[in-house]
Length: 449
Image (cartoon, rainbow, N blue to C red; front, side, top):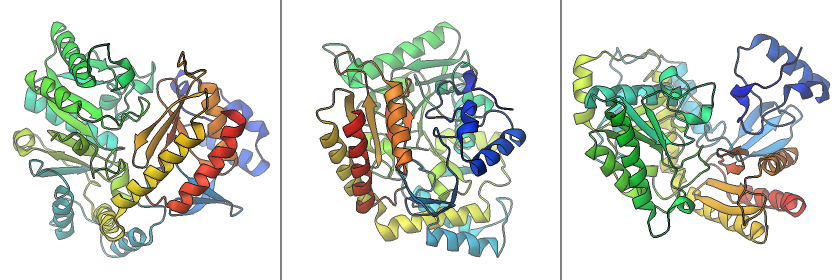
């Protein structure tokens, strides 16, 4: 028995259609059918023809037949699939002991100090969790305690997580996950939305101010402005920088705090700095991190200004059995080792520039490409029906994404209309990977774009 996607998956990018189960190869069809029979609700598979991987290395994944897929999508294995240093560190710790934060762990303290050393000195406290959703949940809980407010401001199509609390301010989850009455949405920093005679900074300040006023009109004081510094789900807007300071000033003037969600934009993903907020020369009140911290191990973090979190810590109990566990900490420390040993940020800068330059050259004359944008190894290609109207073309994006998958290169889609190609590889992506990606993309562009 197969099912059809409901409204929960209506906006899910390049999803597998369960109605096409019968078209899959026999072994894959059997596994997917068994999966459908035992997994709970809400799961989805990627691509018209899903793919199963049995191993990985660097920015490459391998299926059962040994076929090599170039991974230009998965940011979870931050320093690369099965990085040997991370594997060794986790294996060594697993063979020794796995305790939690109720016990003294020198390795935990060492890691916390190293992680905080990558942040501005004003950010000097860190709490650990297991996922980005948990990190954002804790961040908002602390923000409410500190400010006495309930109001939350996010961008129009943001994603910040899946707990009940965090889903209430993640508009991209759609109608099945309604926003809370204390949530207001604002534009992403798309320069094309700026009114004539204004600036992006003024436009974003005005958006925050309007959202705060509407919250107050309905009885909600501002607790937090929360942004993903890459605006990953809004369609990827990383430049120009500088407007964020105005947004933060407006939030502070209303008595709220600024939470920088660095789950996707952090760990040098954008190349210019270790953290997305640093590109704007602002210091958040709270920073959240997740997926890349442990290269796939479940560890996340929340970093605070002490004046924001200390009173919460004196009055509210927080403990998470697996957060800050010995094994997760070993993975996190190993990731930082790799950043130092391999000069990861420079690799991101160099290969990101080459990737964007190649994509711009390939698409320069295409009437269906509105823009190539991004920073570091986070790139978006916006596909439209024509450059004059800028009407989104989701169908074209779906075709390109699946054409790439058929040629064994993995990407995805983003944006409210899911018409922006999302290119976000592990940071192990090297110059050979850039070349392979561009050669494959050029083949598809010649046919589709």
